[in-house]
Length: 314
Image (cartoon, rainbow, N blue to C red; front, top):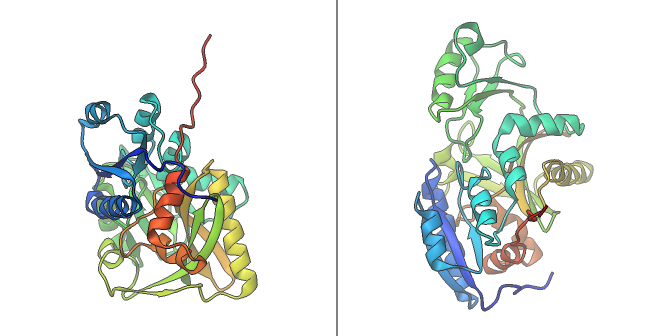
C-alpha cells in the first residue's frame, strides 16, 4: 500500500482526552505528531476536552489522527463527532469502536462467530443484592475487570472467594459494569492488524503475576518474544483468529487482538481498536520485523483515514 495519501494536508492529532488512559494517549499522540511532522505533514496537536467541537471548527483540519484511548476517544463518541463534522479520521468507525470497547458485547459476537473466548458473566452497575455477586462463570481463579476500560486498568486475578468482593469494587470504580471472566493459564500473545491483515504475533511476559497498568507502561517490566514462542500450527491459528475477531466486530483499518494461549489452545480476550503508539507499545514491535518503522506505521494508519457513514437524503 503506497503511503502519502494525505501528504500536504493539515493533520489534527487528537490526544489526551477525558479517560483514565489520558496519560498514555498523551504519549501516543506526541509520538505520532513527531513522526508525521518528520515526514513533512502539517500537524496540529489537539488536546481533547469538552471544547473539542469548537476547536475542530476553528482549526478545520483535513484529517484527524485519533490517538485517544479509553472512554469517549475509543468507544465511538469522538468517531461520531468526526462523522458529523465530516472530518476523515483514523481507526475503526462508530459501531465497531463501541462494540470493542464493551468487552461483554464483543465476546457475545465472537461466541456467535464460533471464536474461542473465555466464559464470562457481567455484574451491571446498578446490581444490588444477590445480583451484585452472581454465580462465577468457571471455577476459581477468575479475572475481574471493568467492562469498558483498557490498559489493564482495574484488573485483578482472584484466586480466593474471599477476595472477590474487593476485586469487584476495584473494577467498579470506573462507574460501569464489571466483567468476570474465566482465567486461562498460558502465554499472553497479542496480534497486530494493519490494513485488515494480521502482521505477526508477539508474546509478552510480565515480570510479575500479570499485566497491570504499571507493568505495561514501565520500561523493563516486560519481556518480549517476536515472533511468539508458538509452534507453526498454533501461530497460524492465532493469526487467523485475530483476523476473524477483527472482522466479527466490523473493524476495517487496524487493531490489536489479545489472546491467552493454553498449550495449543488460543482464546480471544479483547480487541483494541486504537492500540497504543508509545515507545513501549506492542503494535510498533509487531510490524517492525516487516520493515515498517514507526513513521511508516503512522503514515499507513493515516492513509486509512476515512468517513465511514454516508448521508442519505429523502
